[in-house]
Image 1 (cartoon, rainbow, N blue to C red):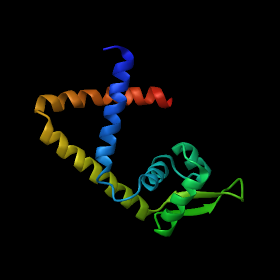
Image 2: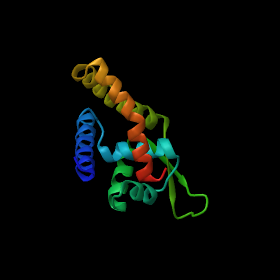
Image 3: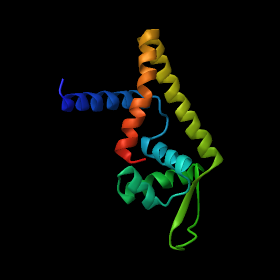
Length: 141
Protein backbone atom coordinates (compact mmCIF):
# COMPACT_ATOMS: atom_id res chain seq x y z
CA UNK A 1 0.00 0.00 0.00
CA UNK A 2 1.47 3.38 -0.95
CA UNK A 3 1.50 6.35 1.44
CA UNK A 4 -1.39 8.13 -0.29
CA UNK A 5 -3.56 5.02 -0.06
CA UNK A 6 -2.79 4.71 3.66
CA UNK A 7 -3.65 8.38 4.20
CA UNK A 8 -6.91 8.06 2.25
CA UNK A 9 -7.92 4.85 4.04
CA UNK A 10 -7.20 6.43 7.42
CA UNK A 11 -9.12 9.62 6.50
CA UNK A 12 -12.11 7.61 5.36
CA UNK A 13 -12.22 5.26 8.36
CA UNK A 14 -11.77 8.03 10.91
CA UNK A 15 -14.54 10.03 9.23
CA UNK A 16 -16.88 7.03 9.35
CA UNK A 17 -15.99 6.41 12.99
CA UNK A 18 -16.66 10.04 13.95
CA UNK A 19 -20.01 10.01 12.14
CA UNK A 20 -20.98 6.70 13.78
CA UNK A 21 -20.13 8.02 17.25
CA UNK A 22 -22.10 11.22 16.66
CA UNK A 23 -25.28 9.27 15.93
CA UNK A 24 -25.82 9.35 19.70
CA UNK A 25 -25.68 13.17 19.80
CA UNK A 26 -28.82 14.88 20.98
CA UNK A 27 -27.54 18.32 20.01
CA UNK A 28 -26.63 19.62 16.54
CA UNK A 29 -22.93 19.23 15.75
CA UNK A 30 -22.40 22.99 15.30
CA UNK A 31 -23.69 23.72 18.78
CA UNK A 32 -21.69 20.88 20.28
CA UNK A 33 -18.53 22.10 18.53
CA UNK A 34 -19.01 25.63 19.85
CA UNK A 35 -19.50 24.39 23.41
CA UNK A 36 -16.38 22.25 23.00
CA UNK A 37 -14.26 25.22 21.89
CA UNK A 38 -15.55 27.39 24.72
CA UNK A 39 -14.92 24.62 27.24
CA UNK A 40 -11.38 23.85 26.03
CA UNK A 41 -10.17 27.27 24.96
CA UNK A 42 -12.16 29.74 27.05
CA UNK A 43 -14.13 32.75 25.90
CA UNK A 44 -14.35 33.55 22.19
CA UNK A 45 -16.20 35.89 19.88
CA UNK A 46 -18.64 34.55 17.32
CA UNK A 47 -16.10 35.47 14.62
CA UNK A 48 -13.40 33.48 16.45
CA UNK A 49 -15.70 30.47 16.63
CA UNK A 50 -16.64 30.73 12.95
CA UNK A 51 -12.96 30.79 12.05
CA UNK A 52 -12.15 27.80 14.29
CA UNK A 53 -15.00 25.78 12.81
CA UNK A 54 -14.35 26.85 9.23
CA UNK A 55 -17.90 28.10 8.76
CA UNK A 56 -19.44 31.45 7.90
CA UNK A 57 -20.07 34.03 10.58
CA UNK A 58 -23.80 33.65 9.91
CA UNK A 59 -23.70 29.89 10.53
CA UNK A 60 -21.81 30.35 13.79
CA UNK A 61 -24.16 33.17 14.84
CA UNK A 62 -27.19 30.92 14.29
CA UNK A 63 -25.72 28.25 16.57
CA UNK A 64 -24.70 30.85 19.14
CA UNK A 65 -28.23 32.31 19.16
CA UNK A 66 -29.70 28.87 19.89
CA UNK A 67 -27.13 28.21 22.64
CA UNK A 68 -27.89 31.60 24.22
CA UNK A 69 -31.62 30.86 24.09
CA UNK A 70 -31.07 27.56 25.89
CA UNK A 71 -28.85 29.18 28.53
CA UNK A 72 -25.82 27.11 27.50
CA UNK A 73 -23.64 30.16 26.79
CA UNK A 74 -23.62 33.72 28.06
CA UNK A 75 -22.16 36.95 26.71
CA UNK A 76 -20.15 39.82 28.12
CA UNK A 77 -18.66 42.90 26.52
CA UNK A 78 -15.26 42.42 24.98
CA UNK A 79 -12.70 44.16 27.23
CA UNK A 80 -10.77 45.73 24.32
CA UNK A 81 -13.54 46.29 21.76
CA UNK A 82 -16.94 47.36 23.04
CA UNK A 83 -18.54 46.49 19.69
CA UNK A 84 -17.83 42.80 20.24
CA UNK A 85 -19.24 40.25 22.65
CA UNK A 86 -17.31 37.44 24.27
CA UNK A 87 -19.10 34.13 24.65
CA UNK A 88 -18.62 31.95 27.71
CA UNK A 89 -19.91 28.46 28.40
CA UNK A 90 -22.28 28.36 31.36
CA UNK A 91 -22.44 25.66 34.03
CA UNK A 92 -25.55 24.37 32.27
CA UNK A 93 -23.66 24.33 28.95
CA UNK A 94 -20.73 22.49 30.50
CA UNK A 95 -23.08 19.88 31.99
CA UNK A 96 -24.80 19.43 28.62
CA UNK A 97 -21.45 19.07 26.85
CA UNK A 98 -20.31 16.49 29.40
CA UNK A 99 -23.49 14.48 28.79
CA UNK A 100 -22.92 14.61 25.03
CA UNK A 101 -19.32 13.49 25.45
CA UNK A 102 -20.33 10.70 27.84
CA UNK A 103 -22.95 9.43 25.36
CA UNK A 104 -20.33 9.36 22.58
CA UNK A 105 -17.80 7.58 24.78
CA UNK A 106 -20.41 5.05 25.92
CA UNK A 107 -21.40 4.29 22.33
CA UNK A 108 -17.78 3.90 21.24
CA UNK A 109 -16.88 1.82 24.29
CA UNK A 110 -19.79 -0.54 23.63
CA UNK A 111 -18.65 -1.00 20.03
CA UNK A 112 -15.06 -1.62 21.13
CA UNK A 113 -16.18 -4.27 23.64
CA UNK A 114 -18.55 -5.94 21.18
CA UNK A 115 -16.42 -5.89 18.03
CA UNK A 116 -12.83 -6.29 19.21
CA UNK A 117 -10.98 -9.03 21.06
CA UNK A 118 -8.88 -8.07 24.11
CA UNK A 119 -5.76 -8.21 21.93
CA UNK A 120 -7.32 -5.94 19.32
CA UNK A 121 -8.38 -3.56 22.07
CA UNK A 122 -4.72 -3.38 23.19
CA UNK A 123 -3.71 -2.56 19.60
CA UNK A 124 -6.26 0.24 19.43
CA UNK A 125 -5.05 1.57 22.79
CA UNK A 126 -1.47 1.60 21.45
CA UNK A 127 -2.60 3.54 18.36
CA UNK A 128 -4.19 6.40 20.30
CA UNK A 129 -0.87 8.21 21.02
CA UNK A 130 0.13 7.79 17.37
CA UNK A 131 -3.15 9.31 16.18
CA UNK A 132 -2.76 12.12 18.72
CA UNK A 133 0.72 12.83 17.35
CA UNK A 134 -0.64 12.94 13.80
CA UNK A 135 -3.41 15.33 14.83
CA UNK A 136 -0.94 17.52 16.66
CA UNK A 137 1.32 17.65 13.61
CA UNK A 138 -1.56 18.64 11.36
CA UNK A 139 -3.01 21.29 13.69
CA UNK A 140 0.33 22.69 14.81
CA UNK A 141 -0.58 22.27 18.48
